[in-house]
Length: 274
Image 1 (cartoon, rainbow, N blue to C red):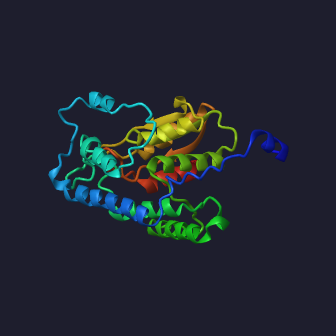
Image 2: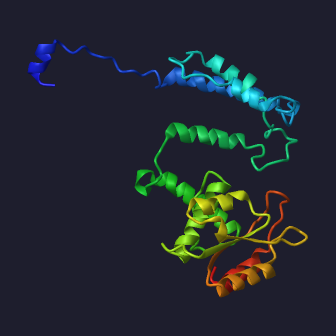
């Protein structure tokens, strides 16, 4: 704004910066302490809570009861928020942290990892570029190297940590597509077990493959993919003018924990350039 315009309109009032969302010092410590108190009580009560807290209630009606319009202002009372969360919202759900819960992948989780998530969120460093946080990037590289060594991968093996199995499947599928197909994905085929996790199929669709590109290979009596059936399907697809490029083995299926014969699948993959 020009000096002439300011003179015509009068002095522009000074507006103090809004810092309500910037917690520092004692205020930050108090919030963390309050959260920790709730979490300690939550973990201590694990064995006494039901495995399915939603059993016997109308879950749809409960969820709809939480609907609300956008508030004009916050409560200003974190105690109210924590009580609402831990006393009303969290209880009617699967008790994945209960020591007796054995369904689904999430499991109990690790408090150590939760603390690490807190540190990560507060420090909030950008690690998409090596130079932006070289020490943190190197820490990830170290862990990836350890994991590669544990499963016997060569020194040339590289990788990245992901938030979970679904994103890992997506990342691996994109890498396989780039390595074997480039930009042309026409007539390509993917081979999975009839026990494969649904995230693999979802990942394939997300990166541009239609349902017809996915071949479901039958499993044997121990729920492992049959290498002989895989080899036969690949041969049939090649003869039909299709382009087999990827086979997905499972090192522990969700349904039964079955581990495919990965060495046999690797042999088929090597023979067929999958």
